[in-house]
Image (cartoon, rainbow, N blue to C red; front, side, top):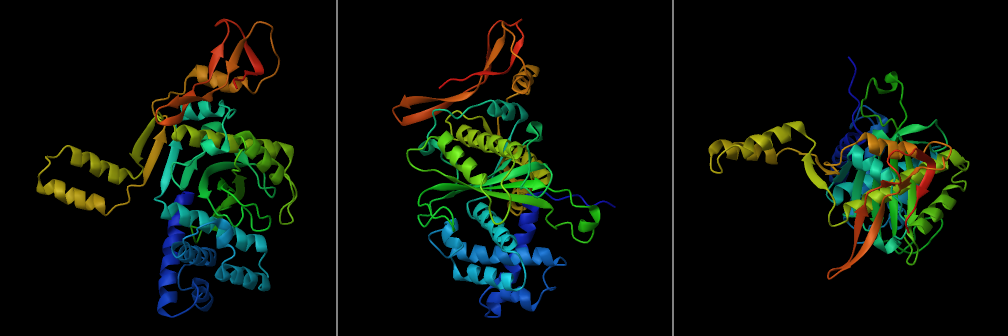
Amino acid sequence: MTTKRPSYLEVMDETMAVGRRIQRDADAAGLPTAWTQIAEHPNRYHRSPITAFNAGAYATVERIYQNTSTRGYGRLFKDPDITAFIYDMQKRGMEYTTTFGVYTVAYHAVAYEAHGRHHYRVSDGLALKLALTELRGLKTTDLRLPYDSIYIELPRELNFRVSNGDYDMLPAEGVFVVEDRDDSGIDVSRPTPGRSWRLLVLSETFAPPDARKDDPYVIDATQSFFTLPLLDGDTVDDAIERLRNRTMQPNQGKLPLGQKTLDTWINVWRWVMNVIVYATTPDADATHLRDNPEAEAIWRRIQKLPKVSAKRDRLQAQLKGMDPKPVVMLGKSVRLTPELRDMYESTKGEGRPLMVRVLVTGHFRRYHTKEGIVWKFIDPHWRGPEDAPVARETEHRLG
């Protein structure tokens, strides 16, 4: 019998639940950290030592995150509990990048939970439109997350395949984005005061079936971490260029990324920025859904019942005890049309006929209102004779 592969969010939920059990026992035993509890009882909490190890990291980060007013990434990794743990793991022979990576994932998981689990999904039609949209004219001060921590699914329609330099190109699953206002520095090793976004991109690694035989919650994904500095006065293109230059540098002994991989990352970053800008425009097409089919079915049954009835009360009590797994669907009404697909494919071809239809990329236009400056999304569209051939690798950019 094949075990259904859980989503990465389900893996995080499982790991966080284990971490909280570990932390409760550590508190009851008067132990200083959750990791101490794991070290003394390695097999008590989960059949997988990997999951127990990760859960201990989640518990430690959550305790620190809840007990500090400054939740910045830089300050987190200066906490004595975490620095002591990383040092201890190095003494035991574990690579620094492994322990650092586990705590970085834990940081994103804890922030996502603490800020209300805001999950975004983009329709295929809107996904292609935003892939054809430029960021020209936008400044870093225009970039605002709808919430301090969000998760965005990366649609299969765009076929984003990424690599961290150790594996082949892998299908990307999603990205966490956290707003970091930590004035202690954007990076632990290269302090740069200011606001930034922390990005965690998840991509599948296709672990062999026997690696998951005993534990379906073994994480079989590659995590890639990035910091996008949002310095005052920069354009969004400036910020992406800074991130690009930094990503090209060797890090923790890893070789710089190749140009093809780097180009893919830039496409991912730009698309994510466009999703966030779109989500925060006043006229965004946003629909709130329940990703839990059972909860959705109960909610629909409730809507058909009289407002005052015992059955309605019972169903409402049942629904209250469930996790509805809320998701915000962006662009639900945007259809994936052949014309839109042609626009997207036109950026991949070669050649340029003399009489052509030219793709005008999507963009965000600034408007001044009584409430202040707002941005409106302008769809990508064709310009030129309808019966003319399409100009390949040619775009008319507005800016």
